[in-house]
Length: 354
Image (cartoon, rainbow, N blue to C red):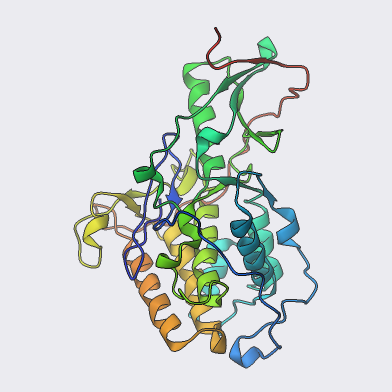
């Protein structure tokens, strides 16, 4: 779970299915500006041409569920366009560290987009109760439906994003231990069943906090690059939760409770909002953000950069050593998952039959 403190940002939530998310505060109807016109090419200032053809076309890869508001969809499409065209190479030590963290050869926009594309596919509403889910039981040719209770406002108001797909995979994996007849679980997106038979099924939830102006570096210009930088930090942070494996005890790169330590915001102490490893979500996100700050140029005002630095310091403070003083690097290799089942002829069993 990613929690941001005031500057501010203060956020956090962990859903019933052990999904870890990112968040901030909530407005009733957050709005984003239309996609901004392209900026002239000026590498020294960090400006990029948003009309340049994309190699990966991330914005058309992502499927938005109909429950996601149009303003959030437009804002994220703008962010995807920028990710694809923004080279995060800074010429500093951050380059080698970030490449090693992500397992990539370079930090060009196409490479970063491909990394996200491998882990993120579907964008859902923050309220999981809006969706049908089901347990696949192949031997009975059935899909047993289940659902989550509606989230309470006080629980969801701080949510920015949740890598729920990784949580659904783990939930199904745990069910297989107690109920051997279970294959895995699924979730319905736009009337299509998505199989959570692997941790990289690509299902992510978007919370209202992701575009809340109260928790953006630039509250005046919703389309500001500084705001994109924070959301990209969040996207890569969440995507890291789709990595890891049980054999190495790294599945999902789960967070740990934050200690009462120097640098940790008081509101974070005792919350599952820290990492006790050297290559988890907070480290990935902070290295992304560090590159954006370095490359932002004239796209960010001095005030924007000051606030982004505060976001960065907060993320860095969330990486804490284990009780024995270690900070290990975990195995990020994903599991093979489970064999996909053809459910086209399966019967749907209601969650609560009469």
